[in-house]
Image 1 (cartoon, rainbow, N blue to C red):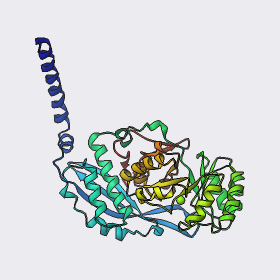
Image 2 (image 1 turned 60 degrees about the vertical axis):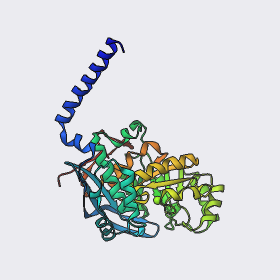
Image 3 (image 1 turned 30 degrees about the vertical axis):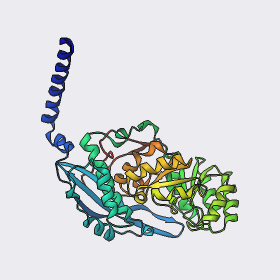
Image 4 (image 1 turned 180 degrees about the vertical axis):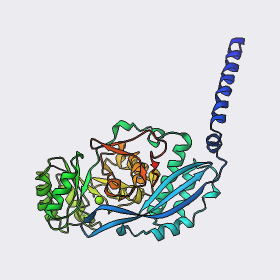
Amino acid sequence: MSFGRRTFIKSVGAVSAAAAIPVISCNSNRARAIIGNGKMKLSFRPYDLLLSHTFTVAGFSRDTTPVVLSEIEYEGFTGYGEASMPPYLGESQKSVMQFLQKLDLEQFHDPFMLDDILSYVDSIDDGNRAAKACVDIALHDLIGKLLNQPLYKLWGINPQNTPMTSYTIGIDTPEVVKLKTEEADRFKVLKVKLGGGNDKEMINTVRSVTDVPLYIDVNQGWKDKQEALDMVYWLKEQGIVFIEQPLPKTAVDDTAWLTENSPLPIIADEAFQRLGDIAAFKGVYSGINIKLMKSTGLREAHKMITVARALDMKVMIGCMTETSCAVSAASQLSPLVDWADLDGNLLISNDIYEGVKVVDGKVTLNDLPGIGIKKLKI
Ligand SMILES: [Mg+2]
């Protein structure tokens, strides 16, 4: 080795060492945490979300949504998570807290071991998807904070490519539907719930106010495949983009027939939950609606997008009624999807976080680390 090269290597080493010292002394907690010698402490509490409007879809109405808010503390950093439990999914605040009580995260010393930690969480019991999501979201938020980067950046996702989000108009009387549609004038696309027996009236009322593109969610409300197809053809003339879960989730053959004959994409929601369900839906549905509360969180949702793309299926990302915590988490993946329905935090009056915003109808990511939220002082 020449003297020049040796000197160069020595000086590179000196510069690296010099650069490393201030990083450690500036933020020794972060540096120590990244090395992975700390202890993770999970805490959680129930919280009831108050809906701004009574929410009606095919099958039921409600004014509140129960959630559980979680925190994972590690070396002075805190990751936030959330489980949301709309009643039809079968989880409750009680079941989520019972599940979380079974977990021993203190056995893990390195929060970056996501595969190990989340595989362990998944193995504790079947189901409990929202409970698992509230650990997954908090863990992802934590690692983003430890690295001081938003998740989209860690995943190499361009934040400029976020989609428009739809805003949901529930089933109601023409007077209320008209009012809600008028109030939603800052959104560039609306999602209209059908299946309540007044479908044409709902659409005609919305169309009396706005001509923005509409997503349709039937929530399994149609029962007959031929009637469903006739309605899809009528809807196509009304500026509709796609139809979500038109038939009962058990009506697999009828749905495959409808998808084959439909002029609009048919999207699965209630019919599927997790990664392993997707392959069987190729040919039955045109695409899938991924939600963190079904997928057990971000880690599996990200994989689901990849698998659905490989199967040439459309991808939508949605949410339950949630605070800005879970909605901001899902938004980190939103540049990868065709359509987003990320309005859950906008439907409640007692959010305790500030996070992703909707600007000119578009999901707009910020540069805060992790899932991109701040806890509000309430
Ligand atoms: Mg849906």
